[in-house]
Length: 292
Ligand code: GUN
Image 1: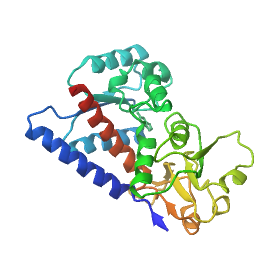
Image 2: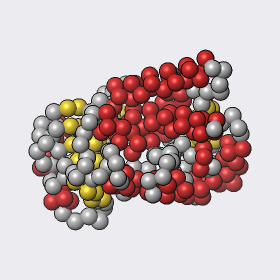
Image 3: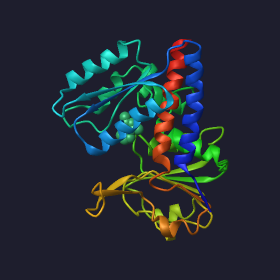
């Protein structure tokens, strides 16, 4: 059984990016600049954005964090996005989700310049992804592809079952795994809350990608021997005995499932760190495109 080590792999990727940035600096070129907009005080979102900003520093990127209060109106947020779109210093930016309920998320994502949309959430980029055109691939699915690639996990002709149809993970993942090329060429089943007999489906899967946010959802009896398991779930479970007051767990009953599979991602230290590395990769790509 192989643990797909996202922490190590993401560090490898960050080292590769650092070398490229060092070269840019040596040539007197502008380095990539990522901005992140965060609205409100959600603890998990603040942690994620903090990690993204720290990752920028680690690889030598410029970064800007834009913090806005929970009471921010849609108009105010759209004005901030326009500023970032128009600012030539900024190569790419993200608006951390979820947004407070007075703001229409779809409208906000539509307002981001597709050339700066390093999250790959704009309909133009999502459509380009679905049509196999060069684009920004959403960071979490991109990170999963990269992990499968670097560990040489075969996907061609395999049956991939995706659990959860979120716009950020499940939906794009289902498209990417079925695309031509590697990693892809898979036969994909996308399951969700209305799926019947899910065990019957997951137990036929060669690869399972679960992005549900339900701790311990995927149990050993739902998985066939030798399957590949990608756990995208990140849930904070309150636990007073821990210093932080919570611990992080995934969608997979790791202890029992790991005994029968060929590859599995841990939580934490699997897909999570890969997401950040691939956001950096998209930002580097944005800089390279803007230079051309
Ligand atoms: N919230 C959860 N995941 C993500 C992500 O990848 N990007 C943004 N912008 N918000 C998120």
